Image (tube, rainbow, N blue to C red; front, side, top):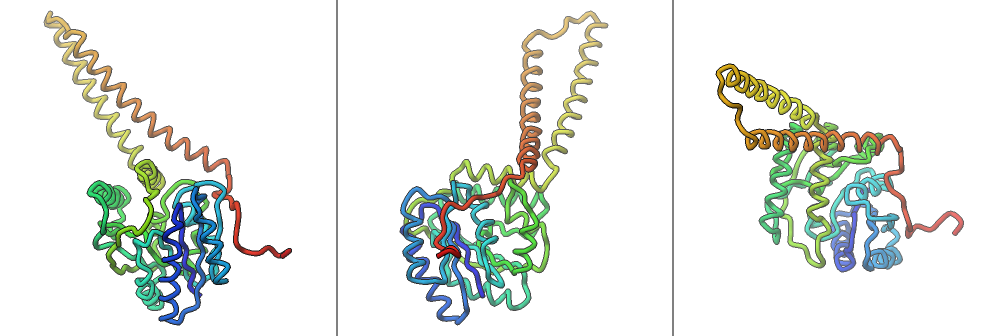
Length: 310
């Protein structure tokens, strides 16, 4: 059985269309499937739409999270709840065409354990969005040494059951599933498609969420920030030593020590570097605290599944 996992946030107008297309695709390829929809605590009628779909088709299961955890946690929730021999993760905004599903399944049946659907072009996206995406994946290649990441990104993918079970071993509260999957290894391959323009609604993928993903990805999989702080500290100390020699030499020669302007500039620069370094250390310490609490990664507020009492 194939599990299709869809995190959804304010997608009431897209889910019905997505269901029709998914149903049509699986009817054509004659594969058994289930559709697991994770409502990331939408503030519109998304969960009502999910309930209506589940009443018509018992292959669809819906869950509403207790609060807006973000797409990464919603995907983790879906993977934990999936029952299939493999799982396909795709967004609810119809930008990832369900018609690509047969290609993903074909690669999986050819022994690939992780199949990425990489974007060759992004329709309807702004220059800023495309630029941030390229920058993010460039950083992942340079800092995390994930050289096989597509430059345009890949957040539409298929995972074998073995990978799903392996992911359950990782209980990190912060991080990127995409980076984690690349880090894990296994047999991976890629297909390509054109990311389509959003049909209805607006994306909940705000700049703040993008920055959080960027920071989580770097801090969770690389020692680069800490190592960078060490290098910067060494260079500042060396420059300070040279400046001290310059001042000492001027004092021996009877030349007046430079005035307050240069001193204030040095203090300001050092203060700025120290604040940045303190912020980086704080990010690491916060993650240590967050992990030590051992809180559940998500809570489910409601589900369309009937309880055993019913």
